[in-house]
Length: 128
Image (tube, helix red, strand yellow):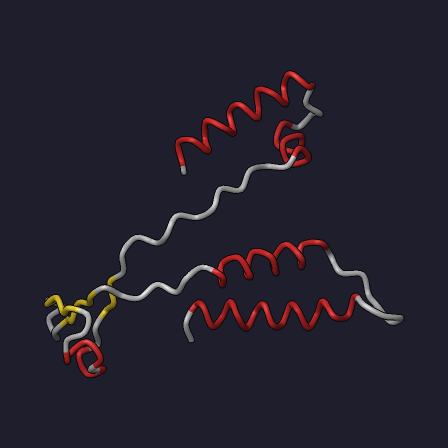
């Protein structure tokens, strides 16, 4: 089972569990379930990455590069290890005010919050 299939299965299970929080016999579910479902939906919405080539290992562990599309690529007896390009960049997600206060330990003053947001903006600039 691929990671993508596992994530899809987990999302389906969480959505079924979440149905229990609706109606007259509702149970109270933690907010983390909604957070987990949102994270899974976001990851599953990203395009599936296709391998660009592969490496075929012989019985001595020596490898030979196999280009995607060649006959050997799909041949299971060669046990090709798939090679991928770098994953697409992830969308930047900043911290909420509550998370900022949580990280700081004490409630931030307005000036402290301004400085925290400046630091966050610099991190975003460097990482996107």
